[in-house]
Length: 146
Image (tube, rainbow, N blue to C red; front, top):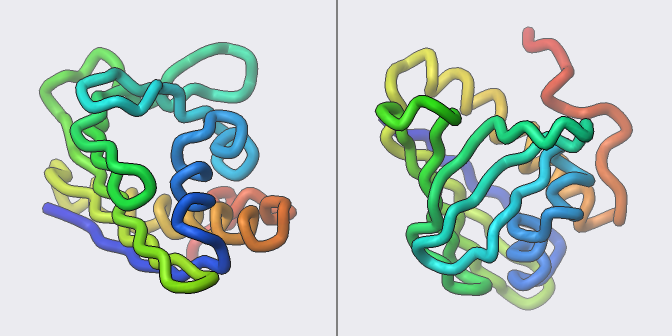
């Protein structure tokens, strides 16, 4: 199963790439640092910013072509059997960029529902951070659905 999300951001493709890969930027809008050297074959980790150094997601970098495409595997630490794949495609056009996210190999409908509520929140905060210089005043993933 898979989930796709597309959004347009008032930023360059390079700025969007940096927002996806710079650990200090991801900490600002995501509450986690995405940590890696972003070379193909390297490991990456989605590390909490609470000081615990806990990685909630780990994986490897499958493809890394700045600023156009980043593909990574995603798994919970200790659960190597359930691995999904996330594609970020970034296309610049003048002063804006189109970011397409595809999250593939999701386990079941419940996992699709989870990412369908999570990705829009994260990417909305990325967009706001790039366009205004600061994240939303409330972490969007804490807003109740419904």
